[in-house]
Length: 77
Image (cartoon, rainbow, N blue to C red; front, side):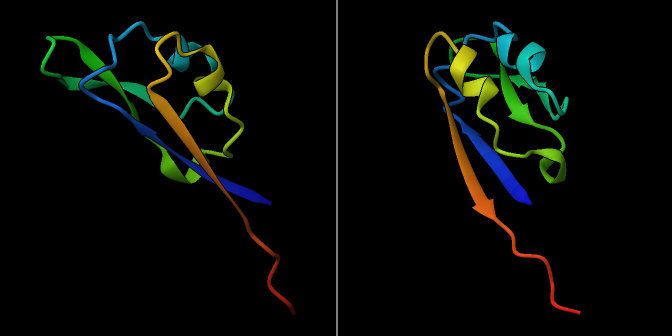
């Protein structure tokens, strides 16, 4: 099982929402606040749902998304 997370360079994000559409887990949304450039930026809304698939980073035209993945080993019974 893989758990992931993303970080977004908020002040560079231009709010195109391509990452929101690309996320198969629907865990990315747009912020309710604005960045220094006046855009709503992408943010991870459901961190427990992120698998680290990197679809969001692949479609981001400005490469503002960094994806981190962590493999989780199943607990021994």
